[in-house]
Image (cartoon, rainbow, N blue to C red; front, side):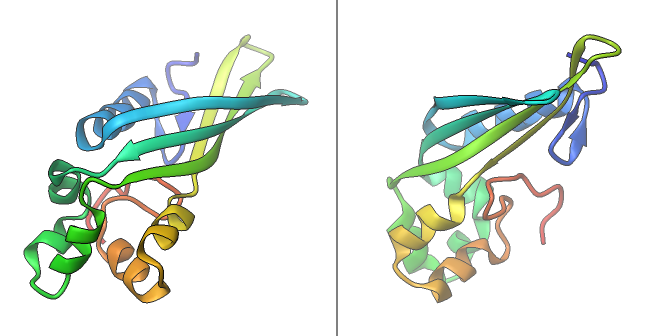
Length: 144
């Protein structure tokens, strides 16, 4: 893997490790299952299923606005201890000149899982409004 590998919005192996560390620290029972592989040109696309459990730690660190507002507290209660299942993919771009992975792009459909759990767009929108994670399961670098 290239030392300056592109990983989603970041660069470098450290950015990749930081993302996985946050995922494992802030969600419980993280599972990533490989569903299939497809090779096209200099890329390999891994189809995945990701499973995570939302805990109090998740709410404090990923959705802090839900725990600090009386208005949004019922949403936090709905999310607590829920198991989310997300379909997604990871795309690995190979650099043939240097014979190593040049970029990794990962995404999972958190929006669909959240909408299924909450049952309506209004609540789902409020959950993501100031969350530190996006609907496609990407970490946001700053609070929105």
